[in-house]
Every structure is written in C-alpha cells, then in structure tokens.
Length: 309
Length: 280
Image 1 (cartoon, rainbow over the protein chains, first blue to last red):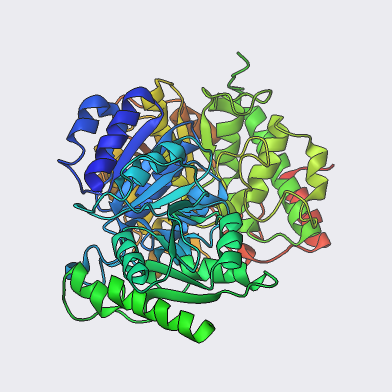
Image 2 (cartoon, each protein chain N blue to C red):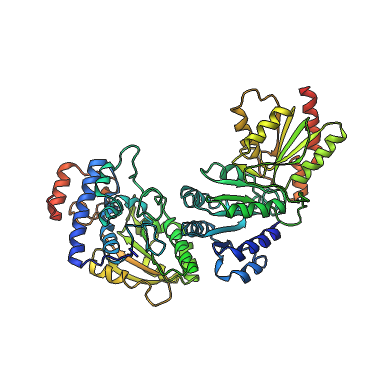
C-alpha cells in the first residue's frame, strides 16, 4: 500500500506544482522517485512531528497542497494539537497520511499500533477521515484529497495488502462502495481488514445468508444515505474495523443510528477492546486475538440473525 | 501593485507607540481583557514592523507577495488588533466591538479568513513559528521574495516545537524567516529564567544554527534597522532576542507580573495616559 502511495504521489506531483511531501524521517528510498521529480518539494522534517504538522499548515495557507507522512501514531496522536490548531482551525488543505495503521505493525508493540486514530481525528471540525481498503481506493482517494480544500486524514496499511477492486470503482469521498450485493445481512468495513470481511461474507453465503458488503472508506463525512438503505433492508448490520471499538467507524455509525427512527436492524461491532496488546505477535496473530477474522465474524453474524428472526 | 512598507521616521513611530499603548490600556480596562503586561512589552516591536518595514497590502490583504507577520505569542492580540486597525486593515471603530458576544475580537487572534491582516490564529504557544516556517518554505518553492516574521514570548520558548522548528529552519537555511523573542523575563507565573532554564537565550538560538542579534526591544531606531536587514546575508534564519520590560511605558506596571492578568481601574488608566503623554 505504501508503495502505491509513493507511486501515486509521484504521478500527481509531476503535474501539480502545489504538491509538497513532508516526511518524518521515514520512507527515504520509498520516495526516491518523488524526490527525482520534485526535489524542491520534498522535505525530510526529521523526528519532529509537531513542527512538521505546523509547517504543513503554513504551506497550505500559502497555496500549496502539503502531504504529511509518517507512521500513524506519530502523525496523529503525537501531534494532535498541531492538527487541531494548524490544519483544522484554519481549515487548511493538509493531507495527513498515517502508514502502518491499525495492527499493521503488531510486532512493533503498542507504541506503533494505531487503534484510536479514527476516533480522535473525526472529532475535529472540518476534518475528512479516509481509510482505503486497498491501493485502488488509496490512489483514487489521494487524488480526491488534493482536489478539495480542507484537511484530510488518510489511514493506510504497510505493504502486500491484496487488491480488492479488480476494476476501478466509481469513487467519491463520502460515498460508500458496494463490494457485494446482498439482502439478508450487511457487513460494513473500512480499511485493510476488508479481505477478512469478504471471506466472512463467503462463509455466510455457504450458510445460506445473502451478505452485502460495503466499503465505507470515508468515515467522515459518513455516507448516511447508504446507512439508511442498509439499515432498512438488512436484518443485521455488522461494522468491522481494525481499530478500537470506541469511537471509530462503529462509533460513527452508532451516533448516526441514535438519531434515526424505525432502525430495526441489529447492529454488531467488530474491533479491538479497551486494552493495549502487551504480548508480541504478527498482524495475523493480533487479528485472530481480537476476533477480526472471517470465521469469527461470520459466526457472530449468523448467531445474531438467529436471535433476530 | 499596492504592496508598500510605510517606513515612518523614528519620532513618528515613537509617538504612535505611545498612543497605541494608551488605547491598549483603555481597551483592557473597558473590556476586562488580561495580558496587558505582555501587550505593552511588544508594542514597539509591532510598531517597528507594521509602520516601517513590513511590505503589506491593505487593499488586498492576501496579496501573495506580502510579508507575513505572525503573532506567535497570541496573548498579545489586544496589541495586534490596535496595530492592524491603525495600519488600515479595518476601521478603528470596529474595535468598539472588542470582547462583545458574537464579535471577532477575542483574547487571541482569529483565523485569517475572519479578520484582515491576521496571518495565523494563535493562542496555543509554539504553533506560530513553525507555521511561519511553512510559509517561508512556500515562498521559496513559489519563487516569491517575502519575509516571514514571527513574534515569540520568552515563555513560549518552553515549547519543544520552537526548537524543533529552529533546527529545521537552520537545516533548510531559510533566510527569509525571522524570529523575534519578546524577552521580558517573565512568563505567566514566574521569572522565565527560573521556571525553565531559559538562559542563555541568545546562545541557544545561536547553537541551533540561527544568525542571532540582541537588541533593546524598546529602541525603535535599533528595531527598524534590524528588521530592515532580513535576510541578513548570512544565509541563515534570523533571531532577534529583544530585551523588553513587561508593562513597558507605565511606571506602576513595568516589570510587575501582576499585570499579566490584572485589569486597570479607571484612575489607573488616567494615570497611565498622563505618563504616556496621551490626552485624548
């Protein structure tokens, strides 16, 4: 995913003289092509993320389109106030990219996990929050981010994530993408956990349930029209995210749902619990531990339909 | 091109500084606005910049070639608001709405889209200088020859982002960036050299790779001459450590940190204006 990010950024940077890349002392080789194309528009800002974010805001207020890149905790929680004041209060078009999101860096320990970023960033007025499920959505979202006039947070994985969209979808920020049609239950997800969600839909299909799958790549603004549709047509709506269960996509959906009348569908939330992962393990291990795997999701959804009907 | 520097003569700048001090004190008293000591310590720096050196465009305040001034010590907003009105960004009468519910003039500068002449909404310390660095780098990328001046408080130099920014500006050799420290030796609750080990402040900036000068922050002649020499030919960002007196201009406020939060009573306003030689 990060290779696709670097590639797309280089492609866009070639034609757009407003595009500036700020990196927090990572991805040096990754951005060699960008540096070759736009040497004046690449800045290694060192291990100083607070400054980096404010510098980006100053650039954005001067007509540029800065993209800030480092590992997710350091480009979000580390410099939250700089995002709040510099980017959001000024409604400056800063694109903030967190790489290795969720449990991508499970083996690096909780300092490098990001299971709170969606929750805190979507609290900021005017902030768009975007979590592509694959590199196709990433490329489309990056181009769209540079085309709008406010701050945007983009949460991406690391490398080797499977491609979900075999053909490029119709894309707009804030518009969910239907990956699978279906009428009994709906699985709503954002980000790189999507392969598990699609596999869960397969499992449900084998159990005789027609499972719709929606990529809610934009957590904010939320596609309320699509939510309205799935909550009216499906008996169970399950929200899946590689993020804490507090305040992320499921939190956003629940907030929306609280204001709706006649929302009869049962809602389930799959995410990480209110704890740090103290033991070591791979992303695969961590997903299994927290139930972010196809068989667990399918089983829970199946049970919920039995309770509901 | 309506960009212009006013280049007022030093005696005119001194007269203006006295009048602005009087208006800041009156406004503080009338609207219960604190941070009077912090405002009075930086008036001369603001006057030197806005009425002498900065190339500004009051007709098109967003003129992309204008110099940028960022009040990184956002709690000096009461001084900045008076300066911007007098400089012609908006009518002085607009300041009569100071502190009113639903108004624009809070204790800290609003965002640039709300009030002409403002470059950054500050108030949380340690943000203005890094944003200024971003603006200076943008000027370099876009081939525009404008200067960016950021006014910091000494207390603000507690913030780590100031020093992160200092290192990046030096690494990038951003010679059109100038940090002025309003070094009045106080922060909110104590002597700035005691709260954290701030001294030797000029040496710190020097060690971080900046071209550093120390000056009397109330000597308008010295200030305009230093501001006129940005960039200074060193190829480095410029730091002016301006030695100032908190509450400057009024004997019973000078170097008394109670005036960080205290509001002057009407008789104190009258006494202050007498000392400043301002009758109106």
